[in-house]
Image (cartoon, rainbow, N blue to C red; front, side, top):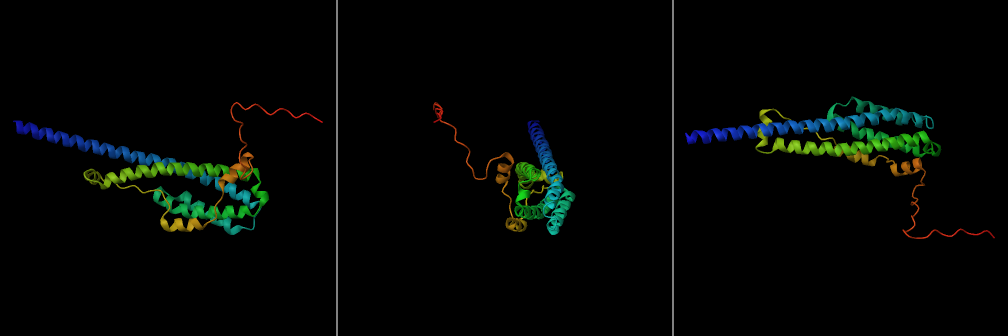
Length: 220
C-alpha cells in the first residue's frame, strides 16, 4: 500500500512538472511572438517614411536614379518579408541602400538644410532606435526560448509538443561586412541641425550654484 502511494506521488509530481514545463514553453513562445510584433510595427513605420525621404532628395538630385531605384527595391523586399528570418535577410540591403541615399544628400548643402528633410531624418533616427531596442528584447526572448528547447529535460517536452526554435533578428556576418562599407549618416548632426545647435558646439555652461550674476556694464 505504501509503495503504491509512493508511486502515485511520484507520478503526480512528474505530471505537475510536465504541465509546468509545457506552460512555461507556451508563455515564452508568446513572449517571442509579442516581441516580434513590436519589431514588425517599427519596421513598417520605418518603411513608410522612405517614399517621402526619397521624394525630398529627388527634388535636389533627380539624376541619381540608380540610388532611388536601389532604395525602392530594398524597401519593397523589406515590406514583403514575412517573419524574422526574411526580415533579417532584407535588412542588410536596405541599410546599404539607405547609406547610399544619405551619401547623395551630403553633396547638396541646400538639401541638408531643408527642414522637411531634417525632420524626416530625425524621425527615421528615432525609429531606428526603437527597432534596435525592440530587437534586443526580441533576441533575448529567443535566446531563452531556444535554450530551453535544447536543454535537458525541457527538450523532452519541446519534442513531445513540437516546439520549434525561433529565428533571431540580425544581419548575418556576410551582409554585416558589406553594410559596414556603406556610407553612414551622422544622426547627432541631424539632431543638432533640427533643434538649432551647431554641430560640435558644446552647450553653454551653467553658473555654479551660489555664484552672483555678473554686474551690468555701464555705458561710457
